[in-house]
Structures are given as C-alpha cells and as structure tokens.
Length: 153
Image (cartoon, rainbow, N blue to C red):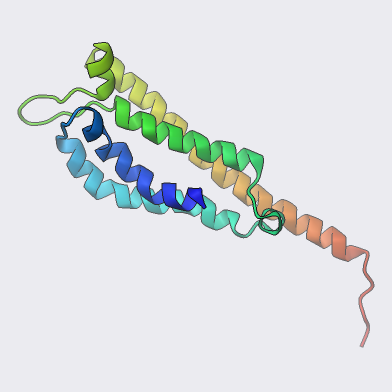
C-alpha cells in the first residue's frame, strides 16, 4: 500500500521538501508545480502493471526485486530534495547539501545528476520486474493448467 502513497507524494516532496531544510525555493518550485503531477503519474505505472502479476497478488505482496527498485526510487527522490541546487533571478538558492557541507553548486549538481539517474534506473527496473512478473505468472498458470484434462463437448 505504501507504494501507492509514495508514488503521489514523493514527486512533490522531491521539489518542495527542500523548504523544510533551507526555507528557500526559487524556480525549482515552478518547475515542481508543472512536472510533479507528471512524475506522480509515471510513478504510478509500475504499481499498476504489478497488479497483473497473479503470483504476487495471490501472495498479497510484490516481488523482491520490484520492492528494492521502488525503494531505490523513493530514496533517490528524497536525496533529490537534499541535493538539487535552485537558481533564481536574484541569486541562486543553495541546496540543503550545500548548506550542511559547504560544497559548491557544481558538486551539488553532480550529486543531483547521479540521484536522478538512480531514480530513473529504479523506475525502469521496477517496470521491467513488474512486466517479467506478469509473464512468469502467466507461464506458471499455463503450466499448471497444461496437466488438467480438457472436457470435450
């Protein structure tokens, strides 16, 4: 159930969560308002696809690789809120990581790039594992029914 909640909340937190740490938000807030709903929709795709995994649904759980991929997404989105520097018209707003450690904007942006890459890879992995789970559960169902006699009319 947590994956449904986090899929909607984390794109907004990734952008607006930085306010909890620095209190400053520039153009990143505008970009967040525009793209967070799209991010939430994209993050809902893997859980929707995973619903069709018959084995996982029967067990009331998700596959282990899927769970780890989604954890990577959530951790990466949380890390994004800590690492993304924010430029504005007046002056750049430092990321919480810059405020805490004193690193430069370029280093913070490099860490943000890695974090975004991890989130994208986690999303692709979660989607791939969800699709693979559907295929696997369909094959196991087909094998289970292959041995049962088919009634003839």
